[in-house]
Image (tube, rainbow, N blue to C red):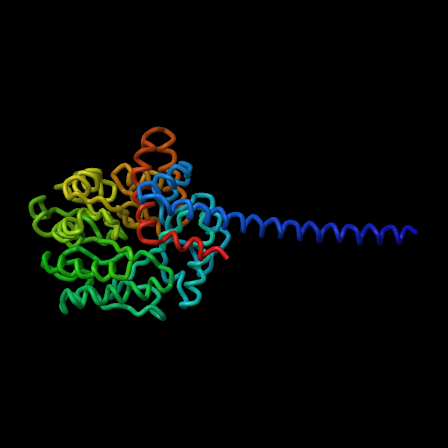
Length: 398
């Protein structure tokens, strides 16, 4: 009798265990479906609104932590989305991911990784998925992404070649799900073949043409590295370098491609491109800070004097020019105070978290106002809406 009782209890326990598993699975499926329905409903609701109304509707639905997350772009380890990466996407609501060779193995694997990344985005907004595909020495995924020539080679062929290669690169990248390319280089006379020319007007012609190529394909691109690193004598990955040219000389040369593009694109208000700010120091413009952390350079020069209205992103804050001198918390805070919309942290998730927390703590203490955060997030939302990135979110959810 006791054996039968034990057997009955065992069977009952097994049944209850199975029901619990099934119930949990059904709940997860139902929750996943509900999330999908919420996103679909939100997107449907936005369709009747103007772009300005859509931006404000999305902004108002976001918490401060979600807004700050949109201002951070990070690198992740590996070729699959591991538990740590999933956790930070949910915990910190990051607005973008940058990919490197460590993330790329094949077309199929890259598409799967990007789909997985987008499906784990918490927000109505999908993520910027970025890459450095300049050409020459700076390329990624060479085994399956056709590599363009170095900018110097392209510049020797002329502007038509710059447009052709940019359009081709954009098509290759967008077919994988990558929506931002950190190119073209707008620096004058940068080493290692990274510049189109030593003549600023030839650089402008090629940058303009490359921009047309990216724009025709619908890809967001980036002009880098403001206000120009062609004169640099030290690799900013290793340490800071000081550019001793006077302001007049910088205006006549280094700034020409940036100023020309900003003028010709109506201040970049269509958000077709970002401007990436480098980490070199320019005593003629700011005697204390590297460009990426300089309000006189980012806000006074780039925004006010040149009239740029688009997205500003820092170069990688893990580079020695910044990381050797500041904590990541301080660097994140100071980049936003300078005027950056997005801070870039390419390698270590712990460093990205520190940069995020630096911004968050500054907002909580009142050192950075919520309106300053909103100013950047409005641009980010508008860029994602106007370039159709929101379409990813529905296709990414199974």
